[in-house]
Amino acid sequence: MSTPRGLLDPSTGLFVKDDFFSNDLVTDNNIGELGWELTTLGNASTLAYQTSKQHGVLRMTTAATATGDGAVLALFTDALVIGPKGFELKARIQYPVELASGNFRIGLDDSVTTTDGTVGVTFDSDAGVINCKTDSATEGDENLLVTGHADLTSGTTMVVAEWVDFHIVVTGPANAAGGPSEAVFFMNGIFVARLPVHMDNDEPMELKFIHWQDSGGSDAVALEVDYISLFIPR
View 1 (cartoon, rainbow, N blue to C red):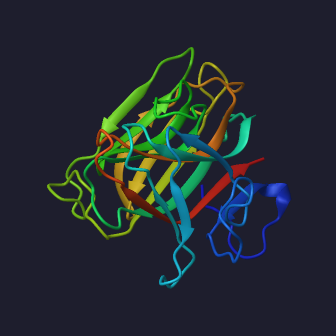
View 2: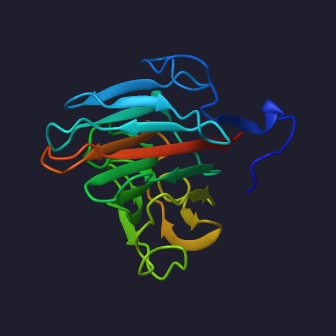
């Protein structure tokens, strides 16, 4: 599967992207190009466009009040179901200041909390250590920690102030529940995991990214997102 380039024909599928290139204020339903829905976790994060970057960048900085402080940005709430043709997701993310206590999850799932979704396909980060995951509410879950990646510290951990390109390709043929059967994960263009997908073709979820801290409230932690895109073939 390859995301179409240039002028997109909607008959080929749904394609949405956000470069966070905007003059608007960062407020609920008015974030980026797509008007993301904002859900606050615990105490409110500060969201701001970064003017010193070459491209549009959104920075999310948690409150330094309690573990679990953070924010969820979501689209198509409980409205997406994935058939056997799957989907393709891309995003560029970095920790601009520090790794410690900073966590994020990006992809498609059904959770608007720090708890993993019951259905979805995501990259999960625990202070820069990356876990690739597929979940189904009824058919079972899979996960694999990233190891041996040349761009990561000790092959496992993101590096402060270095962008990472995350890429998920989910494809068929149909699994026993009618959904896609395989998810392949890449970081900076390098293959990192191949996991079975067990989700049904009627398990609703949404496009999202979630950022939160678990410092016990001692630290405000930051995450930057350069872009995110999603393609779902028809």
